[in-house]
Image 1 (cartoon, one colour):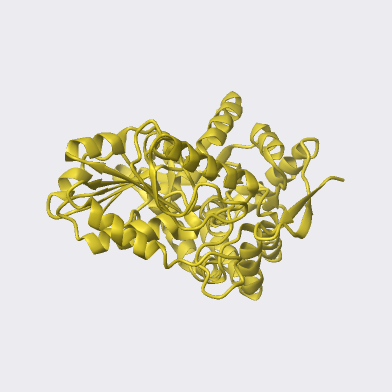
Image 2: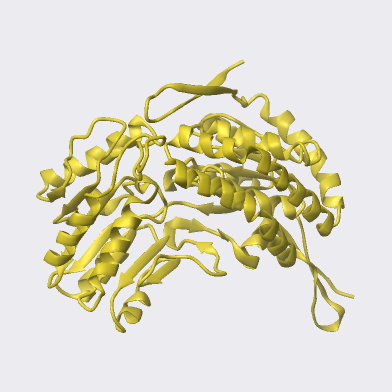
Length: 444
């Protein structure tokens, strides 16, 4: 029996182990999931809502444990981990109601009824950076639609998933929700198995592999595939507000967030003031392990990702970029708050997702130049522009699924959606919830 060990990224000390689900075990797991799905789908939508809501209420007894495990496994500071766990649990009843409304049958003209039926077995493959919240965003609509779910969490955060699933399963019917633990081999075996849909949040590279493995069975896909989000700061912007957003967005969750600001294009006329204020604000952030007081930048999740950030910084400085704060030779597991300017299109910091606490700045002479560089990416998850009344016209030209004007992306009753290679389908709101269901039209 093979096991997977989870480590604290701050110390590399082992936290615990889980049993790996092997490729040989996957067919039996999916078969039991499919069998359970039949009786689960036979319940009414209201009955499923009641059971799911009760299961989530049961999570309140382990809320503190979940928060601690989030911190221990991926390094999130205690305050943010507590917010993630509490927010997921406390919003569950409303979330279930919202999904129920979205999946309820609709009567159309002339007696035609629109129904939302279960697809079958759904694989949810979730990331490590928000190990509870992001798994939940995909798992709950899949369950509510009458599907059974096999959750394959990141190998970086297996203990969060184990506690989450085991607690829910004290209420949910047997095998309606199951867990497949392991690395990419486990994920590939799950995607290739007899399932009906894959809901995935993670990297673009992994998303392409999932699409290829799902193609022979024409399995449904909903995938959020990361971002390389630009921020344009116009001369007409409120500079202080733009600085606050730029630093907070670049450093949130240690920069390990799909909608972190990755590239900043600032009008050359205000660049000096903007950079001076960014450096002053960035220098106030405190780095350290999750349990230390006042820490708001934790460790990078693993050595490989740490080295990736360092390599991008060194590539930029070698090509002429200037460090305004920080260095390009950090040792694992921490990256200090870093501000770098003079970025050009040939640098890795502009081309790919960094996923670290780095503020990356370029200057522009014309707004057309800024828009062109912002759009020159295969990614298209989010984009933000700060400016006066002219900012709205710029926002209309940005190629992203979510665009913020003088604020971050998302919010309100809006789906979480990416454009270009950042998204395949989407989730959230009624339209997103319905992607976990089969639409059926009854005419009579």
